[in-house]
Length: 195
Image (cartoon, rainbow, N blue to C red; front, side, top):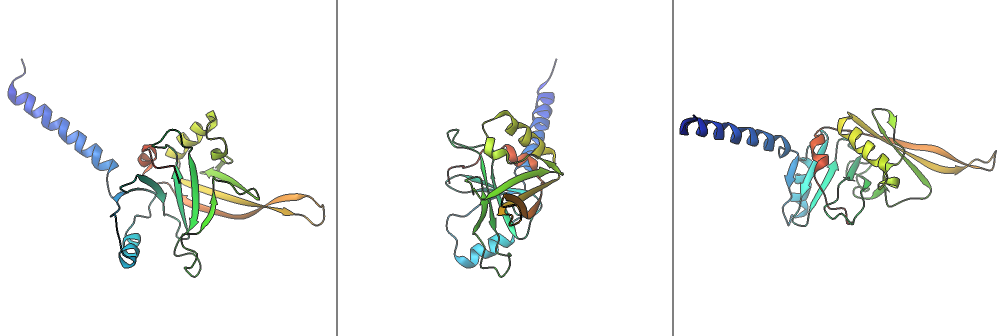
């Protein structure tokens, strides 16, 4: 028969296991964002954000999943939406470190679409094309599963350019942007997709 001491020890062990699991998910890469920050505070706050993979910013209005591991670009990823009527998506914007710093916050490419550009997502070199163009289809789940296991994401952006010799449009690589994929457990947390 189990006594009170044994039950107390079991409860203590279970509490410690839950505490360790919670620390793994809510470690330094989940950040609560203060409601109001002045410009100086905001700049200091941004400099302290982790750059080793995914981070989750929690605002009063919702959550945002970012990747700041590329010094020139910020990747905002929306895989699972808090509101299931919204669609998954992505946004790549210039960081404050891009060129002279005046580009910070400007959008470069997004799932909202740019008809002159073709976007490919490569996970450890394997091309998944643009999975967000078909987010409602079964292939999107395979991309998400692979993203959770990959070490590097490359977003290749191609511009459609008229070839003067052939008179046909061709896709030419504009740039390839690499991101580290640490803290994959954050990819399962629903975020705000409505912006």
